[in-house]
Image (cartoon, rainbow, N blue to C red; front, side, top):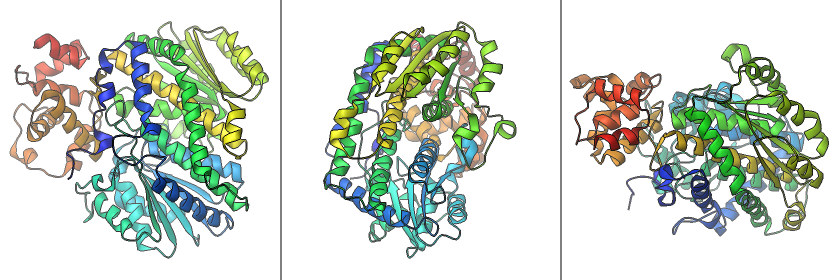
Length: 577
């Protein structure tokens, strides 16, 4: 049986009332939904299933073989949006760990600027995906390619996987996602005779050099927002695979249970984050108040914690319809720390990320409505002394400090820090050391993912408080690519309780600003035309939701006026019913 929607696009029953919860309730519900990463979902295979663990082991061995000759071979990780940003983070991290900068490559649809700004349209270009991959591995003999698509849906990744299958003598292809294969997207891909489902079926028929890792981690806390559970599971599984490969490439003997042991380390770190619920809830409340008052949230961090802040900030515009300046991330060292392939994008793309820019240009403009969230992964208390205290003394707004460490003296220092909320996690390094024999890099991986969990909760909770979520549906999603077009149709269909055809009609009316659609628009099956029109528009879905209400008779004009007066769609609908 083919479900109406894939699991990654379903509403999670756990969070259906998240929009009416207070900050404490929001965090509690988010944590309950996130726990499904480890507990599993329904009857589907999860991260601890034997078939998943065996695939992880096989791929780790394949990568280890490639790493033994890094000059001739390559490992490429690719994805779109959040998946591409995590591909970048993992590739750069393990290039540093292994010392093989020439071997690890990353690809992200739209290029390096998408590391910082959302650009959804390139996700739909299968040919660009194949071309980018071909260029990235020029001159390489053997390649392990890992394409990440949480929903098994991104055309950019499908084009790359198909290219790998066409050159099976040179490529080992891996698909990482979180739907069963029969739920891979079957909608047509523009200018191609294949769907993502076709590529998946082809991979299944070529299992000698094509592998699929697709544990089901359940629907997202906010429907379709794979930056959360999908992103976490992506980061965890990639790091488990590469940690194993790193050991194998140096001829270390690994135990049969090493994959289980490593995943258990992440689960232990997750449980430690859950113990911080009270302080995370306070941070969520402050963040929500800032957005409601028209203020901003600024992440500032050093090295790897700063990268997680930038990734979290970049995900908010396409997810919640926020502006680029609502939530921004800054990192000590800027682009030299980021070490991205395209280098400094400050002038070319207007993406300023250096901490010096924050001090010189942002701090003087801070108001009482703003919130600064400082993130740190500390190995000793000197880091806090040299970097944290001077910054906190200089800002004149609300502040939250997120510190992850396995060092007791750092925690003692954190407790005394003068700020509004301190979220301090001590990683249980001794317990983790008994679970796995991996080196110090695993503690950094766990610290980083712990900060991801905290920041995801802060920005998601803040947007819930601001009214950007209807039940657990994103009521103000940007219609900027194929995936988001169909997601928008689904949101309108579910909230307004109309047919799919009616939902699509209301979405197109909102996009084109027409109370009656001309036949050429109604009959235009090329989704790309509609997306091109909608990409630069605000409030497309909220307006469509209002004109879809059968109990009211909104026109495009009156719907827009209502949204201007109150941007919270749920309140507008409730007030008029």
